[in-house]
Image (cartoon, rainbow, N blue to C red; front, side, top):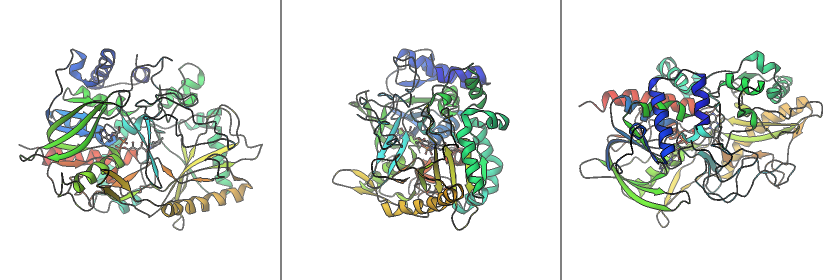
Length: 549
Ligand code: FAE
């Protein structure tokens, strides 16, 4: 069974295409295929397709939008995804493992989990030993920054907090001066929100439920400091969450599930864009296939070298695929690494010098505050954030801080936050020809800028409430601000710099970027709605202008 899909099937109206797409996913899982297409619903597929008109690398937000719109346009499309299709149950009867007792499904080929919160009371009680497996969450390490990403059909949508935030129009315009902002807010943001299934928590339920007590406490403390808070929408089905609370639906957000996947309730991309894409009958997804390199044949078609791996990570086959149209949706670091390597190793030498530049962390910093004993945050916490402290309008120190849960099943008096700061620092990627590795030139000093901004805001909150920071959450060194990882990698192939204003990569025709690498390092809020809306805009233009006979 597909608990994460069937629950939603029962709750909301799906299009015929989505139902057909889900049936294809389900049949593929039953038959044990790694290749998923609508054809798989009826019969086993023939051998690997060598040439397809369009290939999409990656099945996160940018990749999923590209796949759906190509499929709808009648263009046969192959999606190559290095992660698994997450729809078969493990021994516990669940697709995803729990955050409290992670197993091999939690992380991408690790022997120990690497959760963002490393310790509690300085104790190494959070991370657990696991056996290596193509798990759903990866932490990509660079010298002074590591990047959390989702692995699997659905990319980041499988592991993220579902916060579906549309950026402030003025900040979007500042970041994308060449984009028609009015058109974005009139057409592409609404389209993205509607396709993603964005909804909002019922304010009356929010005010009364124990599951959001932690949020209400943080709101009170922000208000005591004269700061305003704002509700943020989410793609988690709040109707489902209320049934979880009432005890009439299997718990997921209310059972601590999030960074290692949600078994119910969340409208991840496999239930929205990708189900619809498969439903067109023109889209096929190959899983556990990692694109290694991109080159161009003499006739102008693209050639991809791809490793197919098994559950142990062993390369069981190396394949070559050809296509006329190539869409990169491997995410900010996935796409940028592929293109930097292609330029520097000479397989796509005409790529612009802008490829590999303009990368940022969206100013991410995580931190915890210690509350007074009477300000309890509650043992029961929903994993889906629904509110942020919004001080972005403060020109001297713009910060938007998501009020994050810390669901431990016990009262711990911690208020946790993921602060998004307006850090202007950007970094570039470089290629090491000796090893073939792509490196990120982000420094600790660049992270310190984000910390300075977060600290100003939270010093103010601590002063107003006579509270202090927690020193025990991020390792043994009394670290208050976790500034060495980001959930929001952005940039590397910035729109209008490495590409034209619609994501067409400079230097080559019929080569496109549709993911978070287009966003210039900062968007001021959680980024997936922006990534989705920009991808919709790119596809609308490209399908009209570039695919005409
Ligand atoms: P992404 O979703 O990362 O998808 C890229 C896909 O490409 C992945 O499935 C990769 O496995 C695959 N891939 C990469 N390289 C290759 C290759 N060489 N060959 C084959 N496949 C490849 O890209 N954002 C929000 O807006 N709200 C939130 O609440 C939120 N919470 C987050 C919480 C966590 C723990 C994390 C990790 C992220 C969170 N984010 C959140 C960020 C959000 O998930 C992220 O911005 C998007 O997923 C990025 O979308 P892309 O399409 O760029």
